[in-house]
Length: 279
Image (cartoon, rainbow, N blue to C red; front, side, top):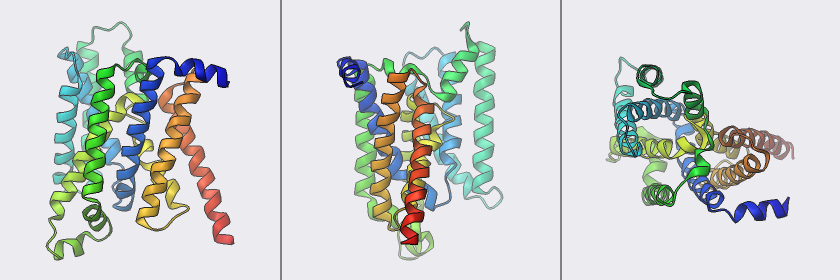
């Protein structure tokens, strides 16, 4: 197996996949803790469906670089979702369901009406559940992912205290004069960027698992925000690496393999948490 791995590592596309996978996993885990604690876990699911709809529009318009359309549409959807969720008549979960289902239906409808592909079902399935596109990354894709990932990491560390305050007690933070709406908007935009980056890795239907599972796993063991965040980042990177390597060695779907490893890690963390409580 070591010789086989060494052979695979000699190929640039494998190295590119690992670099992008690690960056996306790291970014996803940092904001996942905030989403879980704010009980807004399904925002990733909603935005991933919006990204699917945007990808369908880009395909219909024959965009050579679909990210130029997908990224701004997903960011705008995040802003709209945040504003709609603050409406007293439309609660956050209802807003997510409304935008999510609408975007998913629109995307699938457009792909059926205007698709020129002879394998429409395969295209839809690979977009929803991930495909081998993570193994066909170019140097430009890696640089694009790297720049956006560094921007996400910089925003998280620069505004760490603000994000912490908004996560745990938004009302108190607002009473002290903090512009909580601005930081909620920042969190939503960053999540939108992460969703777009993760599309090629796990597919639009599995993105929520990449964001939520590491945070939930870390919470089974640790209690403080900083400890949970650090543990979540380590778990996310480790599961992404293991999932990508297993998918390459066994010829399995990348996204589903990563999520399966995340589920296994969650089970192990639950077991460790129960043992620690008994002791």
